[in-house]
Amino acid sequence: MYNLLDDSMIIRNKISRLPTTSNFKIVGKANNGEEALKIVKKMPIDIVTIDLTMPEMDGLTCIKELMQIKPNLQILVVSALSDKATGIKSLELGANGFLTKPFSDEQLLDALNEMMED
Image (tube, rainbow, N blue to C red):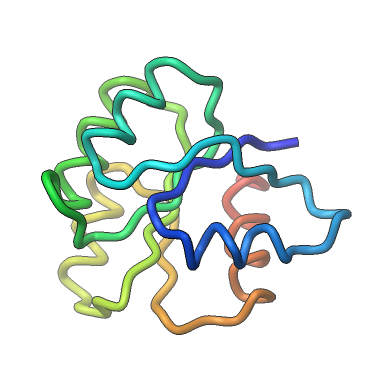
């Protein structure tokens, strides 16, 4: 079972609808990047799904800081921003995948599974 942290209620709902055979469990929610950093410091988190646009701390800054806290953390960027340069930048900072909104439950599951296979 992989413990997940997410900033979006919509994404958390999608994850909760994944088949019970999937190995993903939401154990935390962060309303912004600052909260995500605090949670990752305190809880055993395997995966963070994160948007690039968040209050208080943007996603790119958050990715950079998350990698300093827990270098083996898996990060899936889930964003409506499909700008190629921003996507590349998020991967350079340590994100493991990028999923552009809108997407299906199946696409989300595929992206999560792919990250955990690496």
